[in-house]
Image (cartoon, rainbow, N blue to C red; front, side, top):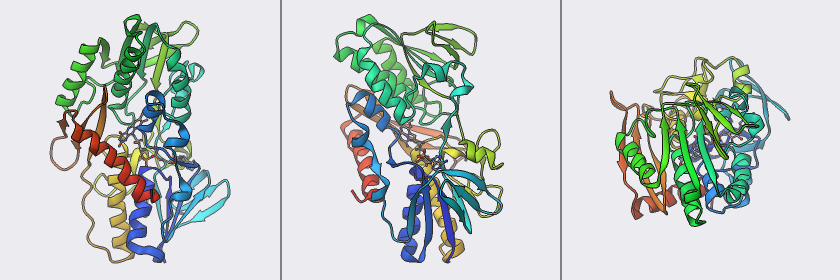
Length: 376
Ligand SMILES: Cc1cc2nc3c(=O)[nH]c(=O)nc-3n(C[C@H](O)[C@H](O)[C@H](O)COP(=O)(O)OP(=O)(O)OC[C@H]3O[C@@H](n4cnc5c(N)ncnc54)[C@H](O)[C@@H]3O)c2cc1C
């Protein structure tokens, strides 16, 4: 029986183990390793900050990911030897015939001077939980939503944060005493979709949110409450909601398999440069945005490749880099963008304006995965 070792039980790892279990059942020998207690959807961080949810409500315990042929181990990966397909954790050593790295992207707070000391990012669960307690006390002055570098997860998420903060301040009747500014390194909020960007920009204009596009936060001074942009401009703030620079986790970088901070893979197959080693999701450079829906799509392709090799599975399809990202526009409205990065010569992003249908589809997106991965 081929031994398949999957590192990371996020969007990519959960979908891959589910696919392999569906195809192989007890004939699989799949080991899925994650250090966490459970899975949290990326967008749940906004639920913690703006929709009154608790971590317990949004966390899906790994104990509920019960799949024939899959062993889920709660361990921390401490070393990876890609060539030997050998992985060391805080509990021991695992050897495999196929290794899939799905450890996501980590945050490099030290890459932005002052950011670690300021301790005000909303891209991790603890960070969002902390800010959920801070935001209610903000009722005057300037809020700054600041992105420290690209690529970053879920490009629409900082825009959603700005709109939901605006909602929250209006709800409390303090919006006129507050300013909201939003710094993003791209030229527009969602570059592959001009229609989506235009819709977000018109929301910002309607609500008096200042968009500073094409710039990133280069450093912050927690004592003076100043953010410095990459062109040297200084922006004062009273509340900072930050998106740190991203890169692959240290353990992946130390394995020697990364280039420019991520694992390079063949975008069509997700194969790394090391035979038998694949990388899916945010940890890889696969020519797609860093979002769960793309990690999941990549995992489906890797499942096909593994099944073709170990179980005479069908000819694998090409990874097309397609997926829908839902976007909270505030005021209870949800729209989406259908992204297609790899199927044709051009990257495309079709905008679906906010509607009751989009809201129902986002609900279904979460419910389908809760049921498929966690039996809920
Ligand atoms: C605010 C916000 C909103 C978002 N909204 C959306 C959205 O609406 N739609 C969407 O598709 N995406 C969204 N995303 C992005 C999405 O969450 C990520 O892109 C997605 O989770 C990536 O999946 P992955 O499998 O690559 O990695 P992850 O889901 O990050 O999983 C990686 C796993 O590896 C584990 N791990 C890491 N290091 C170790 C180690 N050393 N040992 C053991 N385990 C380890 C982690 O615990 C984690 O469970 C959002 C992100 C944020 C921050």
